[in-house]
Image (cartoon, rainbow, N blue to C red; front, side, top):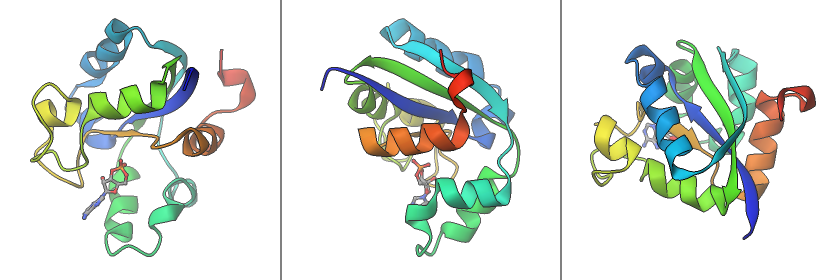
Length: 139
Ligand code: CMP
């Protein structure tokens, strides 16, 4: 536990639907610090590296097609137990099962187009932050 950093990403559906400000403000109001923030579009190879743990899953191809379909907004969030806190705030993967009050519970009705992604461990956070941000983009 203690102070951690995690990667939070607003997926192409969240950006298309104009949810960027609403989502960022939830984390700011919670007290998490934004250490890095940018909008970009995944290349195919970058997306395949980011989601490499899902390479053998049946949904891998559609996941890569979706995540490269438009710009995303990614940020590094820092705070006490940030990995677990942010995962709890976004809710379970499937928007149909995510409880109201969570981001997916409030804004998603799908398992694939589920508005946001967040790192599931401190180790994965380090890996994902390293893929998305260079050292001089983190403050
Ligand atoms: P995310 O938190 O970004 O991590 C992996 C993503 O794969 C997940 O959110 C979903 O968007 C997607 N995903 C997981 N399971 C499925 C599934 N059964 N069908 C389609 N997409 C899925």
